[in-house]
Image (cartoon, rainbow, N blue to C red):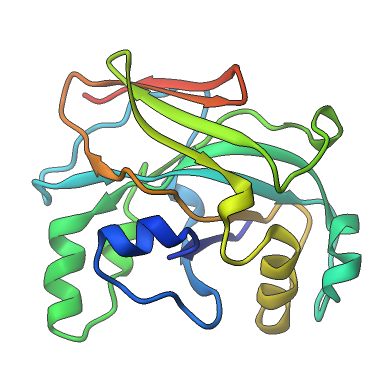
Length: 203
């Protein structure tokens, strides 16, 4: 299983970090060992003092494909989930300043909590889905997939130019505005429309 992640895919999120709207998708990856399932707790690592949450819609690829035309991309996924892209922001900032890769700031163990997948057929339009994150019962992040800079089908087409997509591969499609830190003792709950998809604690 490969895990592809999309950075800077919501304009307001780009602005909150002082960036510029990208001209093409910003792609990075996480290893399979980043995934946390079944509401397992996230253990705060000792190598960072600034772990940020980023709530995202996640697409699961259902068959093999490469150089996929955007108009055929809907044939390559039929399940969606919510995930958290945890980022060791202090490490990322330090590595960026040195011009070095920042894989360790994104791909560390447990950095991709993931909900169960649900059929896409439950929803009318993958590009009009509301999702939000609560921390300790307070809403911290809210987004709608209509605000993506690069839509789901565009992302699949773009990624498949460089990487052979296989059944079970995941695409974290980017996070909206409202990114912030987590702390030991926090309880996170992520919702897709009005359905709670993900719930876990920071320990």
